[in-house]
Image (cartoon, rainbow, N blue to C red; front, side, top):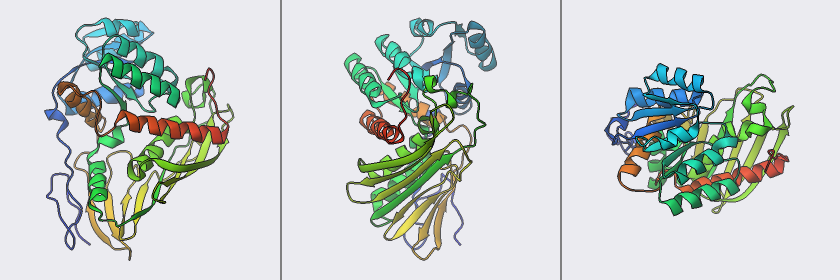
Length: 356
């Protein structure tokens, strides 16, 4: 079996090592921006830690509805300003771009407020509750002339660039099947955000967005979509199994659940070979190229497995510094397509959020 090569290894081909090296630039080389953080929860902590460890980005302000929470977060990460409102972050003239890390239900209002204040915006996935909100945010950002991007961190990771290059090269032949899953066991707790309808909880927007977005990246626009599922005790989606088809007739078989810890793997199977991405496929992960006969032809092993959120921040910083209003790696129209797919899945499951 060939030895796996690291992220900085040379691209190899055909009989030897057919997997290319990622083209991903070092996050530390991205132009430094001043960031404001909206909603200092767990994911915000991971984001700021990744920026401090792997980039030259500067977090200069954090805002929360709870001033003590904002101050504790600022003290933890050495952030100069802590505010007891989101508006104060947007009023801070040092802030170039804001990262919105609140529950899905708040993304639309907070992102719109930031756009109207003339700030560039990175919004945690899932982008909004639904496609209608996504459309309005995109229109507002384009009218205001500010950068806007969904923080679908998987799209910016080096191993996904390896996947993109393999697809572009035709190494797999004609892609016929994509499979991906993301399931976590969550203790039933009505107070937890994932079980709260008012926070747009459920498996789909938090976990299922990963396999759906991955399938959209590989297959392109879905020609058809069908979903079956089960609701959790609070009425949010607890589990969904989804089949999509591409315009070329390829299939995507996707699953998400709050009821069990699944392998969280992904694969792309073509007429010549297949790619397998180990769990967790949405984080820095090993990619294997496997022949039709089941032989492992080559492997890509990421050189860095921690702090993967730094890559999305670096992409946003490069775009803003270059005057671009969206990313080629996660275009706004692609985010909108994914949101429309999530809406369709929820319709099949009979799930709606309060206020929609």
